[in-house]
Image (cartoon, rainbow, N blue to C red; front, side, top):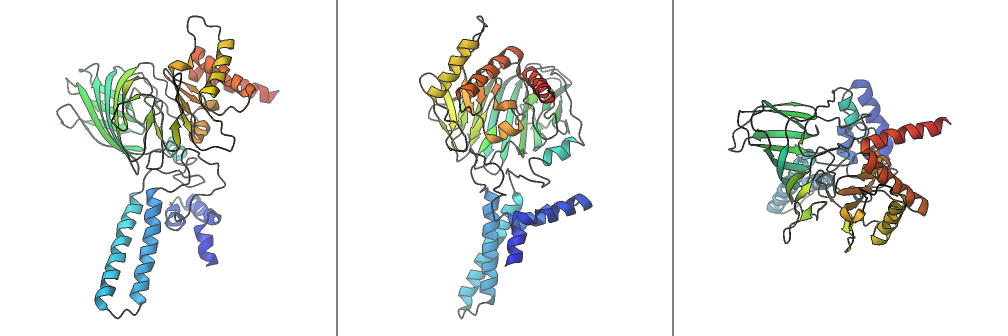
Length: 421
């Protein structure tokens, strides 16, 4: 029993970790087959919007082991009624097989630690071996029509209307964790394309009015499953025109700054309630339309704290230093903005934005300081006292005046200068 507990718990992680590094063979899969009946190591920080790790494939594994052990139990039992025993054996074997297939089907999940598919290793291993690119687009997408299904992972079909129909090549950035299944034109004819890491180049046909891309997958950092979803519009979970560098240090994501506003029509098939900076269609669950540069989708332990003044989406789980973000809270941020804002021609008014409370993954792995100002969206981190609320206002104003990337460059230099002194 002690050996089983040791093998299942995170205490034995050094065994597959060491073997994987030495042999370059992924021994974690064998560990997962035992360990995923338990949650991840709880010593890691909590994801307030995600909750306890209870993904579907974990339930598949639990049910597999229960039904397999039940099969062995009935096999060894002396059951007088042969027909009953046959039924029990068949039923437990069928359930066991079904859930084994479900487990290996996998899906989006959060893995923290040294595992090869973890938030610290997965992208690091990929980007150390794959070159990133920067190239401005030669065209625009005038509208996106997106059908998304989010249960185990993101399954997407995205149709894009193009501004220029006669180009030879159409370049897009789409995160490499999303596998392209097929690309077609407006009539459903297959289009030729090249895929290199985060980059997809579609070959034009002389009169290409629309591109339809079908793909599926997930990111280890920005999850999309039945439990929760975190897909900010500055991340290439959908095809973004041009080539962009997704990461700077191989383990965190750079928000892609998009200049042009585009029309979006997004439908999400999910049992969860989704939220967005786009307007939700009345009487149609998880259907969003509007014009934006950053089509953001999220679900989980969120709720609307919107009022007649502000559009606010806040995390419902309290404690652990997490601030309550509501009208009163945003009023205080706006007060400091008004006091500090010297730009009379371009005033920053949070009434004009969708305000989203930043979750832990975004704060730790995507957004510097946990604050991002888009064209119509504000991601805002916790601020527990007056001084930090004032700092939030200063950061928002700096991003408005400088842009996000320029602000981050200056903030990093300032931080290094302070540390040197």
